[in-house]
Image (tube, rainbow, N blue to C red; front, top):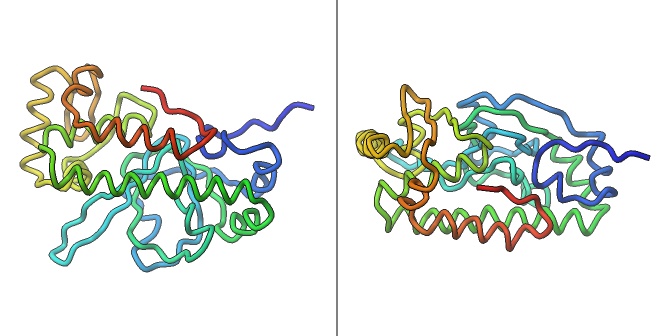
Length: 240
């Protein structure tokens, strides 16, 4: 008997056949449309999202109206891991920052499946911890590193999660991703383009020199990848 083909998502790929079968009948495929708000802070998350391509930004909103990204969820993971294990009230907003496609499942169905399987609960917990590790590293990075190294780190991470060297990102989105002002992002993006590391035009970015961009990035890019490798045991690796 042939195994059921799985959607191209790291969390789903890592599940055992029995765990995948618990959730397979409840999976649906949806488009991730850029700027779509999947949940607002303090709302109850009703669905988990498992991107095949594209990326979801976890965002905190500050009193003066600023929005700052604290983590990205892409094809290696799941939005809603901890929510399926406990309180589903969102601690931050989740917005599609790079368009793509995702599997989605009602959170209640995922919670029921997790109640039936210790290994599925373990996988959800590890993915939740991996996102938490990313949040902590991002906080330190935004406080300590230059705008240039932060933007390089973020472009590399977005490339990994979206699965393409071509990324659709506005200056406003990039500013939110690294906690900087738009004019600073514009200047740094121009510098990276002058160095032939990227080609940037009207929100469309193509990474043209991966090695150069990696040398420009701070250590946080490699650190986050290492944390994911450690925490997501048996998960599908994201190649550079």
